[in-house]
Every structure is written in C-alpha cells, then in structure tokens.
Length: 134
Image 1 (cartoon, rainbow, N blue to C red):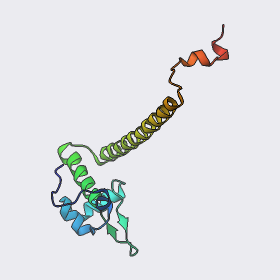
Image 2: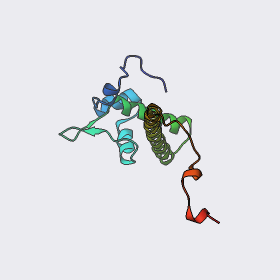
Image 3: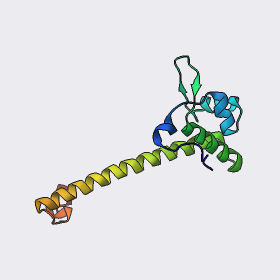
Image 4: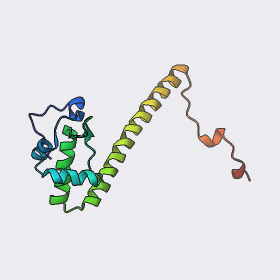
C-alpha cells in the first residue's frame, strides 16, 4: 500500500486520533458507512471523544486501505481479513517478545562472561531425571 509522502511517519503522530469519520472515509477512499461496518465487524476500533464521536488515526487509515486491498484485490472475505489482521498482530507481538528475550539472553551471556563462567555443558550432564535412569 503506497504511503502518503505528506503524512509524517513517527510513532506518536501515527497513533494520534485526529480524523473525523468523513475525513477518514475520504482519505481511505470508502464510504463512512463502510467504516461503521468495519467497526461493527471488529476490523477497526476508532477512538471516541467525550461526545462519543469517532476519531481515526493515520494507523487506522492505513488499516482501512489494507482491508480494501485484501477484499478487493485479494478477494478475501471480511472474516478472512479479520483473521489475517489478528494473525499479523500476534506475529508482531511474538517478534517483539523474541527481541526482548534475545536482549535478555545477550545481557545474561555478557554477565556470565564477565564472571568467568563461559563453559557450556550439556543439560543432561548436570540434571538427572528419575524416569531416564535404567
């Protein structure tokens, strides 16, 4: 999906809900009713003001464009798109978690090297499992 060169792409502005439904619909090329339907189906969750009107962020606009692309060009149903989005979010979360774990492993490895404990030994040589003894 092409990015709009005039829209800033830092994390804070991408998440900020600034567009009312009519502007969000125009920016993404769909009818406002389509946005309401996407919200009912759980594909979008625009933020609400204190007056309960919808506000869309740039990330929401990008998601709407992706939904349109998947349904119109990819021929995927809205249920399929919802599943696709959920799986994509899970993958992003797993990647984030894997990065955290990798950083923690590197930190612990560096700490062990600093302590002089650099020997790697097979787990079976230090643990004895009662069910494995014969």
